[in-house]
Length: 262
Image (cartoon, rainbow, N blue to C red; front, side, top):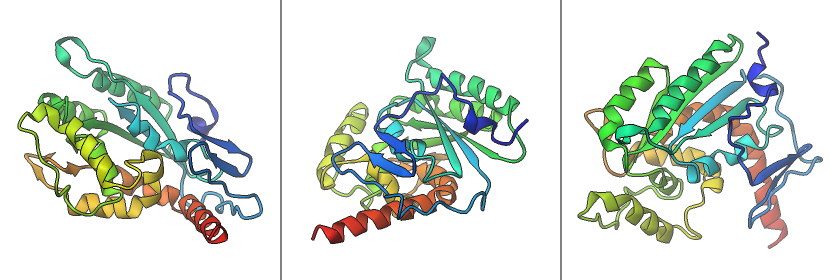
């Protein structure tokens, strides 16, 4: 099987990540802050200095989780060493069991059947404690059996986005007595703590401090993260070597524009 089997053929079941498009060697951000790297300034990384990798992301949420990976997914020229396949499956099976687990295990088998030795595949299932707490032990077992790494955020993915900007353990957040209200209350509160609110499409630029803040504040009990802890740093640590060069070029371009417009 060809080593690039994941990167040339499309997968119609992968939900496209909209909002960032690639035009030749120019990455254009369709957002309030448009950022691009001109061809004259874009330096393509030396080919295959590190192996290419496919990151398969399964998620019960399809908004902010998807947005976090959008920049990488839609700019293959800037990030030639990694490909993102994002699958969202927010529905539930009978009995309230999250169907994302069944979907992820079945889909992973398909990927593994065509896997090659030349490239590295990583499988992750991102979930919140919010709605899935009672299912987490079973989800962990099923993921382990399928070589999928379960990535849990307590109580929601927004905890990870908070640590992209903040190093404290969500100080000042008043925990609702009703645990079912924690997630929605935290999202509202976190948006007031960060200038401009939580921005998943830009959080990737702070990947180093995001990892450090999340890891420094990580606590777990019985193998699962406690409130205000997220395991997303484990995924980010594995992805970081593949995206460092592209992110640095984009940061340099943003700084150049900032200086020019002073």
